Image (cartoon, rainbow, N blue to C red; front, side):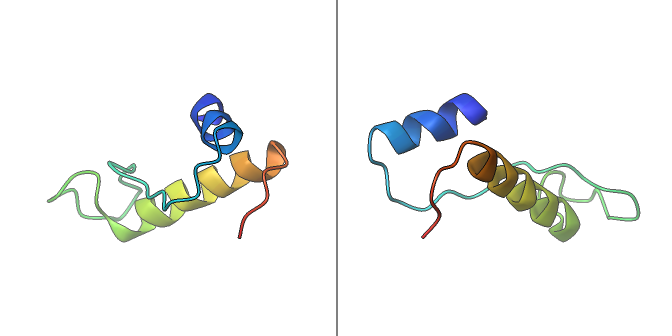
Length: 59
């Protein structure tokens, strides 16, 4: 993930990025694996943390 986000930045990609197949966290339904809300929030935070660590500006 860090390598891909770095590459997107280096080539000037400015489109949307969304998490897909996020983890299912405790107490979440696994009825539709990869799409529970808490897991999505976790995945977005994970991506934001990587972007911040790489000093990539977020619009």
